[in-house]
Image 1 (cartoon, rainbow, N blue to C red):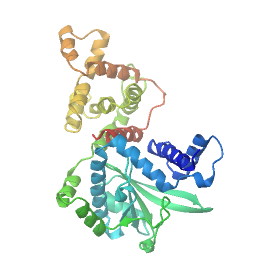
Image 2 (image 1 turned 45 degrees about the vertical axis):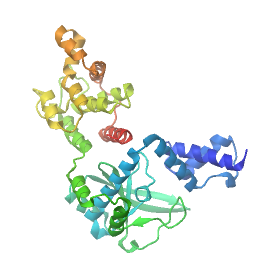
Image 3 (image 1 turned 180 degrees about the vertical axis):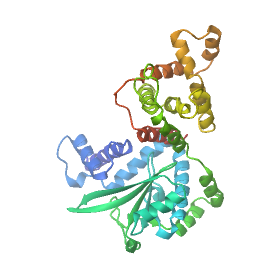
Image 4 (image 1 turned 30 degrees about the horizontal axis):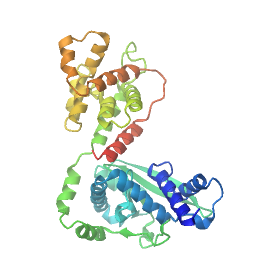
Length: 368
């Protein structure tokens, strides 16, 4: 086979593995792709560079994400600047795909900050209302083990801060993709870059809008967490608390319609009102999420108890005919099936953060 053609095939397969998140590291994706394409040993000279693979990943992003990718990139850059302004005293530097423009579905915002105390960085963020998690991870590279400290923020887009000692603010970091010095931007440099890249953008207004925007997924999580303390009748809910039930229903719904975000949100949130007003949980739940769900999701939640009445034959004929006029009637019946099936004691169910992250990723893919 022509070496250049072989190289392109390996690059394409490695990019597919990375884009579909079957692999997260370029080296592993490259070697797995080479084994698949060549069915055996491959000469090192036939292996594509990380840069070639990255270009293929971007091709996947352009094909599958279209114009939404450009809008996501702008929003991510504004969000990066907002975080950096919050952390100004820690000399933040934006790096990675959000700066270079090589974003794809699921990309996070990568920022370096410089402080001898990760807790000080975290406290600054928490004082401004950010929800975060500190992770310390040992990484072995070139025979040496190093400890990295990351701060993960779940917002409209995932944000990863890497905390370095304060005296490394001017250290030259090298890219594992190109081998060259990493491109990075300070607050001033990012502001200038945005002004050049988006001449019609009102940056001050965009930052203000980003600050005012409530992350609907954080709202969902805050409403779902109290359900863990809502104990239900063992006769109708032998599985136990309402959160465990909701996660079972979500998991069953995901098996049925994995790409229907509105249906999945209804499955996850259908009982949130039980922690607010157990006597009328449907109305209480809908009031709590008003403005943060679609009209279709609202309709499914509003009528999910009707689906049970239809199932047991206690629902009126005329009332059923009215519901049947909706294009989502079949999904309503399916939601009822998932609700009834999600009442098993001891069965596996996803964690809440896994369910929320699945919906986040689906929303990014669909541009919702």
